[in-house]
Length: 154
Image (cartoon, rainbow, N blue to C red):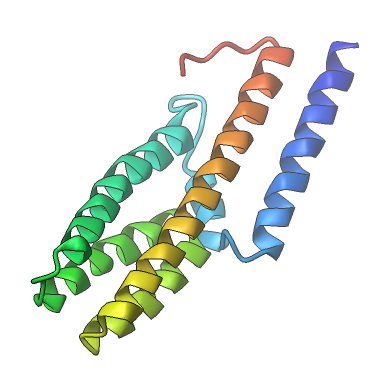
C-alpha cells in the first residue's frame, strides 16, 4: 500500500512539472538545478528556490517603492534591479518571470513610467504564480518523501 501512495505522488509531481514546462513557467535550467540535488544535499532545490524567493521579494519591493515615488526619474536604477531579477530567474529556470522582466526592462530603457508600472504588475503576477506552483511542488515532494519513509528536515 505504501508504494502506491509514493507512485501516485510521484505521478502528481511529474504532471505538475510537465504542466509548468508546457506553460513556459520553467525551462531546462530547472532540470539542471534538480540534477545538483543528491543524498548529501536532499533539500538543495528547495533551499536555492527559497533564496531566490527571498531575494526576488526584496527586488520587487524596491522596484515598487521606486515607481511609487512621483518624482522618480532614475530609470537606470530600475534596469539594475531588473538585471538582477533576470539573472536569478534564469539561474533557477523561471522562464516566464525572466521573459516579463526583459519586457519590463525595455519600458525602463525608454523611461516609460506607465510601461514600467504595467511591467511591474506583470512581473509580480508571474512571480506569484511561480511561487504558488513551487510551493505546491515542494508540498507534493515532501508528501512523497514521507510516504516513502524518508525524513529530511525542511
